[in-house]
Figure 1 (spheres, rainbow, N blue to C red):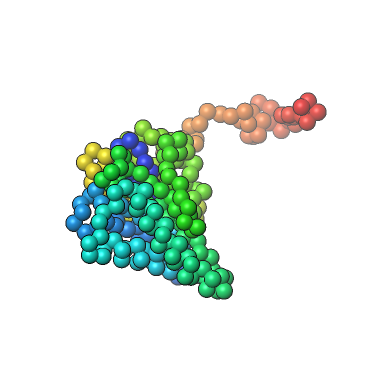
Figure 2: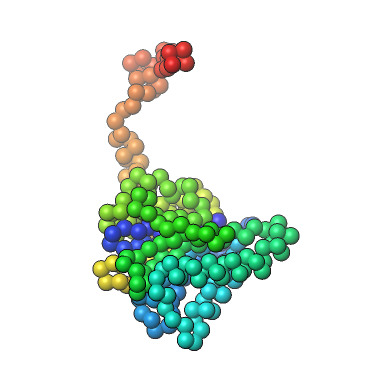
Length: 261
C-alpha cells in the first residue's frame, strides 16, 4: 500500500509520499514521487507526480509519459490542465494494452495519480487526482488536499486543522502528522518519505528525503503531547457514572429512551 498526499494553501503546495514497498513478506523502499519537466524549461515547466497502485502499471505509464517529455523538440505544457490531459492519454494507452492480461492474472489496473505544479499560463499552482479510468478531479478550497493509497487514517487531522489559509510551514507539519497517523495504523505504509514544497512567492520546488531517525524529535514531541492533552481533557459526562469513585458510579442510568422519541 501507499500514502501520498498533496496540500494546496495560499502560500503554495506541500507533497508527501511514503517509500515503503510491501510484497508478501518482503519490504523494500522505492520512490513514489517524481519531478518531471521539459529539459531546460525551468521551474515554469516542472511538475510533481505521485502514484499508488500496481507497480508495473505505474512504471509503464510513467515511462511513456517521461519519454514524450524528453523527446527532442518537446515544448513545455502551457497549463497544468494540458499536462493532466497528456498524462491521461498515456494512462489510457497503457490500460488498453495491459488491462485484459492483468485480469487474466487476477490483477487490477488500479493506478491512482496526483499531479501538482504551475505552468506558464496558470494563474496559480494546482493539484489534480487522476483515477484509473483516466478521469480526474482538481483540489478545491473547501478541502485543500488530495490523498491516494491508504487514505483513511491520515484524514482526521487534516479535516480538523487544515484550511486554505494555513501557512506553508504549518502545512508541512500537518502533512507529516497525517503520514505518521497512517504509519502507526497501516503496517504497509512507512519510512522513508519524500517531502516537497512549491512556493508561490518564488515559484520554486524544494525537495527533501527523510528516514525514521530524521524526525525522531518531532515524533517524540507529538506522542508526548497528544497523551498529555488526552489526560488534561475536561471530564466528560461519563466521569461520574462510568469511573470507579464517581458520584453515581455503579448505578443504572438511562441516557435516552426510544419511547421518548
